[in-house]
Image 1 (cartoon, rainbow, N blue to C red):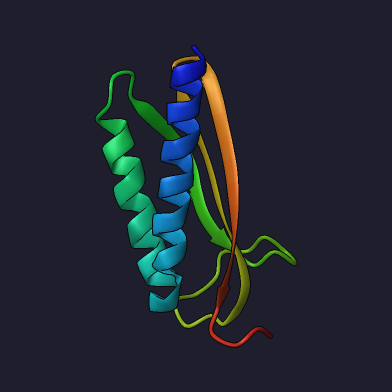
Image 2: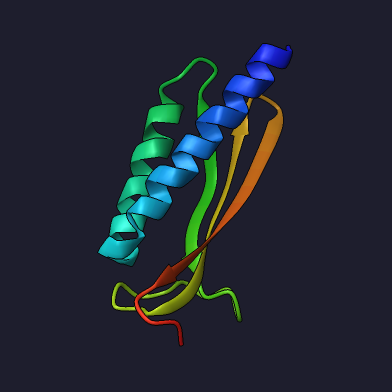
Length: 97
């Protein structure tokens, strides 16, 4: 169980790193990178079932446009079996506002 937990944490860190590396490409690149990671996880056994993926302004949690600059949060919720997973990754696009 400890090995599986460590593996899961390593995978989550790698996925978060991949998404944050896409940040210089802007919000569209982050959405695409996150979608690829989640699509891969949906093909695993047991599969990940996405509840939501949102790239939002942290001040009001509204979805940000592709030309957005400033602070943002990539918010994800999904289920694996009966377990609900939630993660939020802070990102900055362009010059902070």
